[in-house]
Length: 219
Picture 1: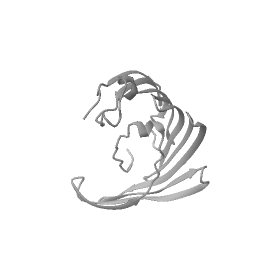
Picture 2 (picture 1 turned 60 degrees about the horizontal axis):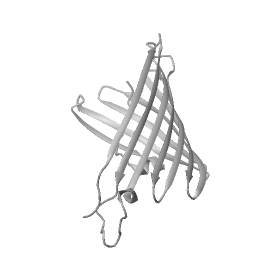
Picture 3 (picture 1 turned 30 degrees about the vertical axis):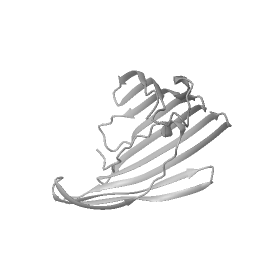
Picture 4 (picture 1 turned 180 degrees about the vertical axis):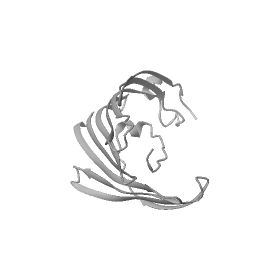
């Protein structure tokens, strides 16, 4: 093994929330700075002049506005609308990347005959600049579903609809889950099928974080 392995991480976050009679308004902003060096290579085959040769710096600025309802009346259409923005800069000796992303994440829900009906929608817009040139892209998701609860079982029934302008195709995937409660929420049998699409970005490829999704059965 060979090479300098020093790294640094700095971040600043600002958060504010305003409560209204039937809504909550949240503002968030943050900045992250990551500096690292490639190491573990063969120093004979890949000679390094100094530590700057292996140095990579990633800067991330992000901000969001979130407006969510807090109705007590379940017959009203609850909603949560969130607008996010980030600028990601990847700086290294072999590449320079600048990525801007704006996305709107919207959720609406209501109750009808004791059944909950949800609609989720998301639109992402990317503006990228690299040494190879500039490019723009966007994609959209629509996820309608409803949930029902009975004494011994509940179900989440819906679909994920994706659209991407590059291939000009609309892809539809199932979003289904049924659970049978044997002992309340302690022991249950369940079966389901779902599908989704993941869209890479320079930000996600710089440090992918694994998350475990779960079905939304309503509050």
